[in-house]
Image 1: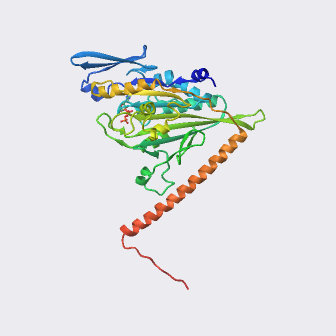
Image 2: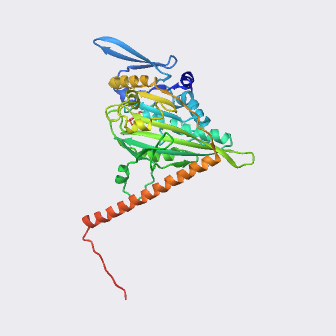
Image 3: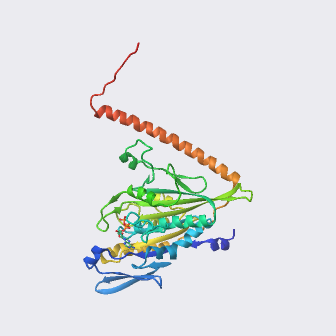
Length: 396
Ligand SMILES: Nc1ncnc2c1ncn2[C@@H]1O[C@H](COP(=O)(O)OP(=O)(O)OP(=O)(O)O)[C@@H](O)[C@H]1O
């Protein structure tokens, strides 16, 4: 392929800026505002006082959403086209990046717990990107009378450890404490991608709130100065859509698997991983799990959109500038998105056989682990519990 043709296929990572409104506490304390958004010009200005001089630093992004923007504004203006591209066959990634308390969870999940869906299935105003994307996918595929399945995964990355937020507890006798410590390994999938071994894939049939609530409840949270319910980790939510195409006689001829990744990545000192793309730019920490998870999204074959989140108030000035600097640099990352190939039925079957083999190996692994845990519990009881008795009986 010619260099010119290759360049034509390149697209930049899209970067949006979202500034959340003042919280009630910030309004009460009359904290000065240092961030001003100009949605129309796609600019955000940060006011600084340096040696008595008032200086404004201005950053331009692909789209800017000020404190008055509603969840629906962000979704309609920026996310709908991306989800449409997923339905057309691209793999896409959307992730929120920002300091603690700037609205990453609010933007990606929304306030699912507080609000309920409307009578006709319409989403609450507070619903974030994930439930809206799921609804758009279902609505579109239903309107096309397509034969499809939608599967999701939800993982947490904390201190270089990956845990599954959707792992069913009742299926395992492992205690919650052990479960949370259970790490999942990252490995190459043999097709140039990365997969997390043992990650639970859940089939979604309609609404996503129950699943999101279940996963979110397992995220590690702690109170920070800026957020009473701060998640202490990075999270990645993936939606895989499998669409089947039928022949006129009705039998399945070929299919396509498209993937949408939705993540929220913490910026700031509490996190040991730093800005993922600063790493991808500097080519350091090549083995960081976050960098590996995002390998295809930053500089790979995926279409990627970053939502940088900031607070408007003065106490966050330093972190806000750092988020804006990183986000601005990320605008220069180029990806080469490729449409997923439609697979012929025979290839599809081969692929599914491969998946069955992989799942068999996982079941075996889980059984072995359960055996080890049961043995350990048995030994623990023996050591810690009351004097242990073995009864020998004999019949006859
Ligand atoms: N755009 C917004 N409109 C209204 N409230 C918001 C908005 N963004 C964030 N908030 C509120 O700000 C608080 C912090 O938001 P959130 O928990 O989403 O931050 P976060 O970036 O995920 O923080 P952390 O990294 O600590 O988990 C929440 O109470 C949330 O409801």
